[in-house]
Length: 458
Image (cartoon, rainbow, N blue to C red):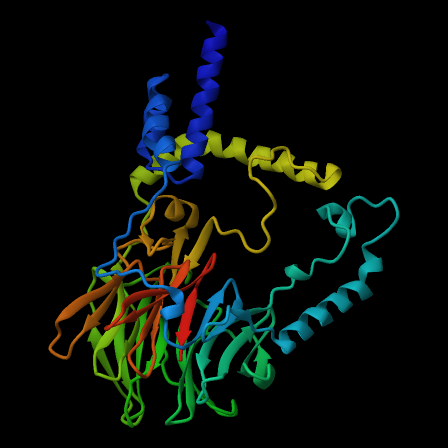
């Protein structure tokens, strides 16, 4: 009887830890406390269905088309701080920044120059010995491309690159692989780049250390930089409105702070229009129930945007109670990882091999997409598929087309990012693939990747 009771307790601990680690509904913690019945129900209702193949497709009007039937297009996309470019039917190629590589090389030389200060014979707590590595890790030097936009020529791209200390704007020729640095400066952080070929100006969102983001205007040579929005808000995703007038559409959300000035939340994201010539700001679309993201207007006058439910971050009594009951299991997990760390340091072997082979790059268990933390493992396990490609974002993230009479039409679901070219072709991503939406041909798969954070078509 004692052995059966011990097995029961160990099984409860294991399945509760599994439910917490995989972000299962919180009621499972209480159900699993019921002897035998709890984890039997958990196995039947959660573990077994997770092993079944998921072929759900839930996008309106999707028709599968072959990739080679897609018209010749230039598509660029961002994946984990790396920029890829696909031209015509060729496979995607990564754009390598010479300036970024220069930063990496300088950092490595600086580390090698001062390596003697922390490296010594028999020293287990100095230099790289403490971390279980024998050589400098070039991947630890963070140099990322954060945004890209097509230039006036189809074979050129503007992009924003940043490291831990500096950031800058660059122009890249995809044919000659030549890179031109327009400017770089310390602590420059920017996102959502867009270029206006008629005005020869760029617009983007600059990120500041206090949590705010403002829209800035940049000349095409990178000489003139001007901030055009301000305030305690997050202004992002600016897009030029087609036409001769200098008008910009962007998303904006207010910031909630506590009495000490720290950011504790953000309000619903609305769509704003800014007339640069008349210095007039207009509230285009706002609803406390939704976030409206990446607004842009096509050449035919329709406004497109991503609509998702707005989530209010709060710490309820239910969450507090759950944190109290889960505290012992979290302490056990922390203690295990503490021992696992020293096992990696001294024996170069983990305490468990259940996690599988080493994964290069960032941890994709939880990722940030459009200001929202996404459980990637849960999404890939149970989420909707688009043309056979698993979605990282839920179906509630909808791509909406809005006419001038304010009527709305959902044209795609599970949309994490999108872009529109001058001819009206829409390219969108569900986080794992890029698709083309053509009124005549329907939805077409362009490419697949492990993570697609943003997409640019031109």
